[in-house]
Length: 198
Image (cartoon, rainbow, N blue to C red):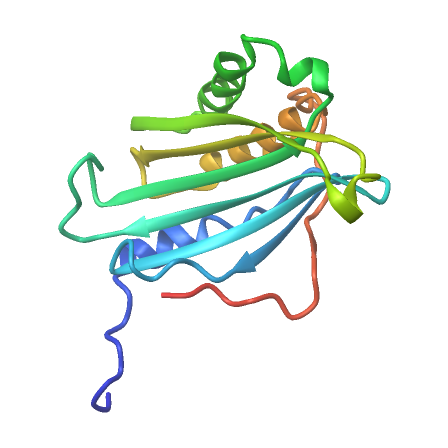
């Protein structure tokens, strides 16, 4: 090791990152490795995803795993997952006052369905309306749902958390979860994805 080289990532973090690469993923979802934020924890990695129907992108998201051997206040452990999902929605859906609680239940029920134990969960659900003005006045009004959440996984294997996050994105995009007896297809990956960052 030369001066300035970072020490190798702890084995627990490496195992957790390896478990984020699912063997199977729904055909509507495209996953890719993306750069992770570097200042939130000593070690981090991230994946991004898009949900498609035909050629239309219906939702996007990212899932970040943070690892601090000493833990951090509010984490309830050494690991923390941070999720973001954004999806286009019909205006009448975003006007529903129950959208926030329902969107949050998509996350918690998906985690439970995949046996992904968690603690210290928190987050926000935001409804956004975009309206154009000036030379963008002719642009259509768009409405979106944004969900930001974080939680502490109770196990090192994060595969159930990734599966739950994928289900959350599909639900936000209006695509129901797959029945338990239906197999997903192998993941579609873009060429030359960004490597996991530590």
